[in-house]
Image 1 (cartoon, helix red, strand yellow):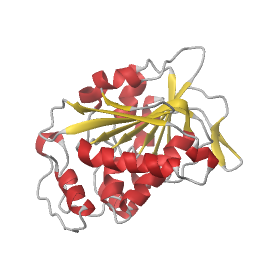
Image 2 (tube, rainbow, N blue to C red; image 1 turned 120 degrees about the horizontal axis):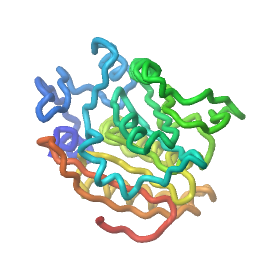
Image 3 (cartoon, helix red, strand yellow; image 1 turned 30 degrees about the vertical axis):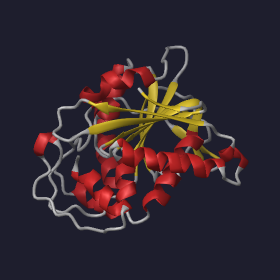
Length: 273
C-alpha cells in the first residue's frame, strides 16, 4: 500500500499525521520534500512552479501502464462525430495527450486543474505540437465548444465547480485527484462534491474512471456512502440517478499497488471486473 493510502487510513480513523518524505521518486513516481496538503491549490502551484522548463511530469499511473485495462471503457470515436472526454486534476501529465493519439485524434479532451502553473505548462506543450482544440465560447456561464472540433483544451478550474454544461462528456478521468481530495481537511465532503460535479457533466451512460492507490475497502466504502446519500438527496436530478460501481487492481511497473474504480452513470449492481 502506498503512503497516500496509509495517510487515508489514518485520516478516516480520525488520526491526523504529518508525513515527511525524503524520496518518492522510487518506481518512477515523484520526489517531494514534504507531503503537504495535496488538496490545497497553493501546494500544487508551488510544486509545478518549482519545476524547471516545459516538461511533462506524471507522478501517478502512466498511460502505458493502464491503456489495456482502460480500453473496455473508452467511448467510440469517429470522423463523423466528436467524442468528448474530460480529465480532472490533469497536472502536467501527458496521459490525455497519449490517449488523444491512441484514439487517432478523433476526439476532444478537456483537461482541468486548479493549478494555473500546471495549465500554463501543458497548454504551451500542446500548442507547440499544434494540437490545441478550437476556440470555445461561453454560454450562460458555462464553457461550450463552438463546433466541437477535435483537440486538447486546458482550463484552470476546480473539479467541484466545473465550467461545462450538463451531460457534455462520455468519459471522465480522475487520476489521483480524488486521492488528494480525500486526504484533505474536508475529506469525504469534498470527495462527494467532485463526484456530483462529474456526474453532472457526464452524459447518460457515461463513465467516471478513478485511478487510485486506495484499496477497495477504503474507496468502495466512500463510493457506497456517496450512492446512499445520493438516493436520499432532496434533489430530483440526483436521487433519480442510478449508479453502478466496478473495480479492479492494476498491474503497473510501480512498487505501489494501484486500482481502477469505475462509476457507471445509470445501471444496477456492483461487481469486480
